[in-house]
Amino acid sequence: MTKLATEVVFTLNNHTKIPALGLGTATPSEKNAETKEAVIAAVKAGYRHIDTAWYYGTEKYIGYALEELFAEEIVTREELFITTKVWPSMHSNPAKSLEQSLQDLGLDYVDLFLQHWPLAFQSDEDGKPSVPRSADGTILMDPQGDFIATYKKIEDLYKHTDLVKAIGVSNYSQSFLEKLLDQVDVVPAVNQIELHPQLPQKALCDYCTEHHIIVTAYSPLGSSGAPVTKLPLVQKLAKKYGVNENELLQSYHINSGRVVIPRSTNPDRIASIVRLAELSQEDLQALYHLGEENPKRYICDPWGKNLDFQWWD
Ligand SMILES: NC(=O)c1ccc[n+]([C@@H]2O[C@H](COP(=O)([O-])OP(=O)(O)OC[C@H]3O[C@@H](n4cnc5c(N)ncnc54)[C@H](OP(=O)(O)O)[C@@H]3O)[C@@H](O)[C@H]2O)c1
Image (cartoon, rainbow, N blue to C red; front, top):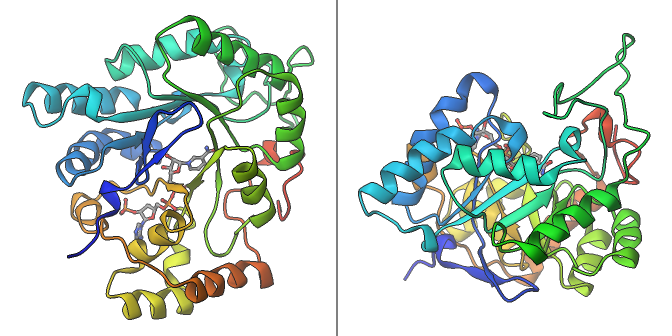
């Protein structure tokens, strides 16, 4: 019988469970409204995990989808795993960011609340502008900001409220994780980073595993245009295992104990990328070598370039 990626669940370091396959929702803004139908299609296809963020502008469409799914009794709140994130422009007030997210999602808690980047932007108290720039285009960092102080506020929400079931980080390199772990009580449950065969970041993944932090792979297809699906080795292995390229790339992570959150707003595609291939160690290694020999990072936002990641062009 075909194994399904939608049925695989991992256990986080606080003993809560996270479904291994989630739907990504960082759509280009003109497609944000399509997220509603995408979420409905995903849940009907068996997905139980939705990844979003205050920054994406998709939370209210996810909220509309959830309202419909709950009303039609297709799924219950408890069966779903919802992740959201606090953006660097809201670094001084993660509680306010979370309140807005919960309001838009129509929920009274999220399953995972992430610090989106270990950065603090100089914005107003509503987080505007979300990416502040000086006249010459330089991104304005808040000199009072401190990424560890932001995490500690997230930690307080975890310790003292019922609004978040687990907390974690995103876009943390090993050196930033080392600094964080030195100073906080709650080890992040997750580090969400760009990951695919062209960018294996093996040392960082090993560090996370050693510290009981689950890695979530974002942009698993290389983002818009899905360039990673076009690699000859990916196409060859997809054929070998009788799955499509998306499923092969998702299996690469899930077989290695990582969560993966591909994005699509195409309901047919969403439903057709749920099979899990059981890759041999040899094939997993071949996929790792691809990126070790010729690494390529697709998401190189300018604010990330001093975060000690390799290959940030
Ligand atoms: N924490 C962070 O800083 C961060 C950063 C980036 C992303 N993320 C999260 O990770 C999720 C996934 O990453 P992503 O959105 O960058 O992109 P992705 O999942 O790597 O790629 C999505 C794109 O690939 C297209 N696609 C999928 N399969 C395809 C195929 N077989 N052929 C051609 N095109 C195909 C989709 O189009 P269709 O819609 O037409 O299917 C969509 O445009 C995000 O949505 C977000 O939730 C987090």
